[in-house]
Image (cartoon, rainbow, N blue to C red; front, side, top):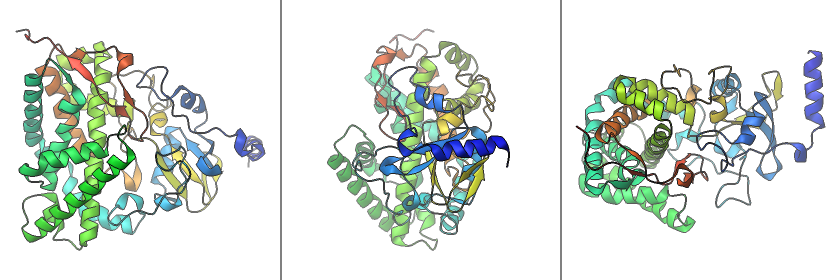
Length: 418
């Protein structure tokens, strides 16, 4: 062991829990697309000690290489009951303990349980299959744009576009009957509404669970051409199917909806980048990758060490939690030069917006297809699209681990230029 490492270990050991930083989450000052300033200040070290809710002492990974190592190493667990939370959770302010994953929630499992679900689902989310959905995504996008144009010229883009596009897509994938889609989307929107009363959100969750339960039963009785029907032929139990349906709904809707809303806000706030995309729609795929890197809406990711693991010269002890800051890792200048600048000409390959390793987002290709279709279509339909309020008045969704905008008031010139 080097002298520098010995000194670092001694310094870390000398710190008390009160001396350790907590996870910075306040974005109320500065650019709404940047990580919290205090988090950026902590990113001078790729891996450092962190104080958690309830007094646990764990780690914060902000470096891109350190984050990749933690997320890909099987010695780190995704099991909820092993994790400590780095910031208070609404409704759980008095405890730092998380319950174990419910039946079918494979995101909170390790191998082999996680592998079993993953193997069943992977073939249904291939690049080829998701690209085959492009035509349907384009149809849903056009439907939303038609309704938006009819309602305009001033609308909330979240309600009119960012949320309904992925909602329609996930309804199509799960096989939700057309007659039930409005009711289904209403329950889902309430559940994900961070400003709603906790009891109201809980009732919406119960309604969504009941809806999926009824949907699974219907697919078992009379299968149709959709993902849930396919899965009824697998060895999944009824409860597992319901749980998987809930996970796919949450993962396939909330993250993409917030990327569409916040991504539009970012483009409207960067007129040079917006003009470049308008001039060359062929940049759509590259733009999506850069927006994913730049915004990193799904943050943070937590992992618990199952045994002592050395990362970046630091010894992470068994039982300690590592908070992987995706937004900080995706702004690591060692990986992405000039990382705080939105640049749609950048090759953003290797970003961690979808995670990394065995739990990397299963639906990432679907999200890419939705955004690659939706952003150019929105900008083409409304060439004069702009914010309807000053940027500082756009309400941010900063109380959840999926960042975004609560609403995005936009407007456009009613008479479009020829």
